[in-house]
Image (cartoon, chains in turn red, green):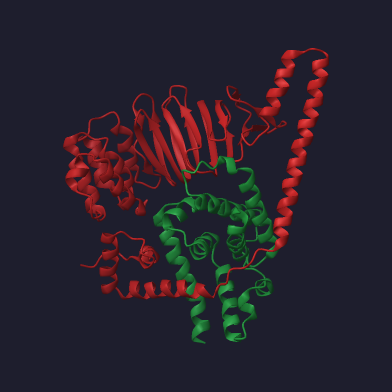
Length: 346
Length: 162
């Protein structure tokens, strides 16, 4: 049987990065397809030819510049500390103890955990945990999150800084919209909403919500996990997920999914599995929509789970070691292995 | 020391990414290590260090390329030829010429393919690590590597056959 071309997977196949069922599928296809065989040779040739690319030694001047920059940073910090101490002493002389405490707090928080708010029309302000940031219809803001990224705050938005420390940066979005751009190890940046918490897995995304908790998460780069009371939706780049209060995150879907499918997903939360919405989702699903189907497995009633699983299996090979029986029992390890294989197409 | 361990690989990636421009590569390398040293406290150890480092590399290179706004233009060939590499000192002229052609071909790849190819070649990262560094799925990594290597083969086929 002639299967789809395997151009996209050739490098992974050569590098031994494909799991066995898919690797076998690529081999079988290449055996029958002259075009993919030729492309495989091209990829292999491209890889071999890179051996002619020598690594280059970094010039010593770079380290000299780094040392100089570090010295400058240290001396700036020292100067700031010195200046603040003098200021504190002057206050002590006038016995304004409350303000002294505030100055001490200010020194303690001049670190990588500081959050700077830059209003479009104003000067940067350092904010601390517990503070609210609010924009009206004519204003917006950018919040620099320590050294790990930034958050753009759209007009008519209200959010609060919950935690600002090296191991955890946490915001609470009461209403409005933010666009987060984070470059840090996963699970350092969190945004809480009425409907659950967005957990950064290294990404860029937009999150909006109204005061009741209805909103949308749209991911443009990397991954975001949206969690509520043990229910999790994993949303990759190019996909979105509705958020609703008291029911957990919606089923994620790719933005280029069919309109029928998106509409069916809108209706799905309010209807029982096995209804018209599920039929539409199953019928309209493409290979990459296994993102949606994989999430559905654990959200539908038991009697509909087999239909969802069988639709996944009809769209893409199920990896070795994933048994239908275990998947239908929602065995965590089985679902994880299935997800890892399906994610190749997401 | 982290700098000694990674400096050549980071610099090499930046150099090949920026068409052999040593000034751009030095700037970006400096930026990356400064950021690394000042934000080491952010690293919690639940992701691999190299994944985190190469995410910084990818972001710094792509940001700098956007600032330069000239990335789509294939570089000045003289710049590519000029940077000192061990290959250029080979007695075998044809090998040196080949190295130069490979550098030019890599340099002509679109940025996202170029970065994927460079990460695989210089770091031998797994596809999962590359996906994290590049902010994309493993499927996208595989696709970019397949296309990137095929583009290289296309560009260099004539030269080798000739």
